Length: 325
Ligand SMILES: O=P(O)(O)O[C@@H]1[C@@H](OP(=O)(O)O)[C@H](OP(=O)(O)O)[C@H](O)[C@H](OP(=O)(O)O)[C@H]1OP(=O)(O)O
Ligand SMILES: Nc1ncnc2c1ncn2[C@@H]1O[C@H](COP(=O)(O)OP(=O)(O)O)[C@@H](O)[C@H]1O
Ligand SMILES: [Mg+2]
Ligand SMILES: [Mg+2]
Image (cartoon, rainbow, N blue to C red; front, side):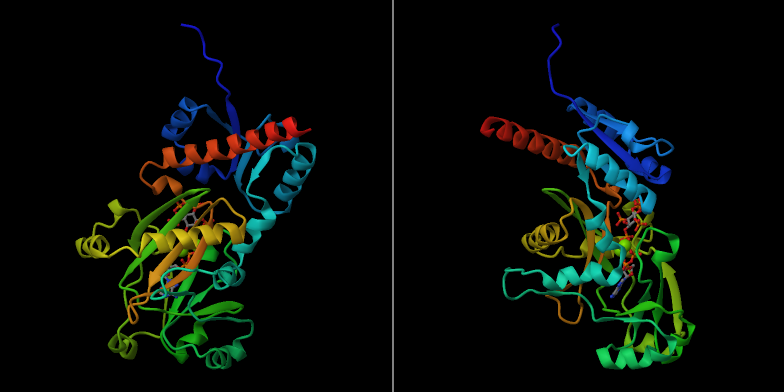
């Protein structure tokens, strides 16, 4: 049989070994290959400029050295698409700037939906803890979150603070965010360019007035929602998640598209909770760059569609430029 002359595209990936293991699965490599995409590992021990050729580079690495490598590579190869530029990703590494963008969104959905972020305040100095809480009008319980969200274990280390006494156990600088009861279920919205997927996950359980009066002062936790459906063996939790009604998908899609344009990013997800007291009030509490897509059903198709969108769009732009020159 004659070999077909199909264009192949090379996508370079620069990821930590742990991320390679979870994201670059054999099923993704094969699915992408069958549709003309070659996923090519970038060797982190060699200069990036000596590697390639690539049509596009995807990455999730931090630090000044990687920034320098990308800058040099881009200046020599301006046609290679970088998904995504570090200057845009930076905004997600700070839990204040990450959520500011949500407040700036213009969501023109049905008026009955309320949308925003929980009240929060950044505290620099232990002496000003209580003053900050009062000034911002935060009520207990609150969640203490690290300011940075840079992928380190520390950046996921949180604490529930039940009362004024609990504040003494915290080490500022830190963010205090109002804990909002939301029925123990979180909605995660995954974005890969034009593609948007929604899943439900386990979250922190509601805190009743009763618990608040009798609980300890401070409770530390980490990565509570980072369990896949199979891990959620507790039947009660599994039922809770199954029975939770998804927010209107048109609304979530509008938020996803608004965030995509405002952040200028292609690969991210965000966590949404529904305020149990109000019901139609949705709050974004977290946005993550290049999250765990492999946990989505059919992630191979979603990501391959995304890669093709990116490289083919670029090719169309190039040929239009060529024609109009
Ligand atoms: O490892 P996974 O698959 O659980 O993905 C993590 C994400 O889980 P999610 O897809 O939202 O359930 C996780 O999301 P959350 O912060 O848990 O909401 C982060 O994106 C995490 O990256 P980092 O540690 O913040 O750099 C992601 O970790 P990396 O895979 O990027 O190390
Ligand atoms: N304001 C909040 N009200 C209620 N629960 C919250 C709030 N913020 C975070 N949580 C819970 O804590 C978990 C971790 O917080 P998150 O900001 O998403 O940090 P991470 O980046 O580690 O995922 C969430 O998945 C959710 O279960
Ligand atoms: Mg989260
Ligand atoms: Mg996060």
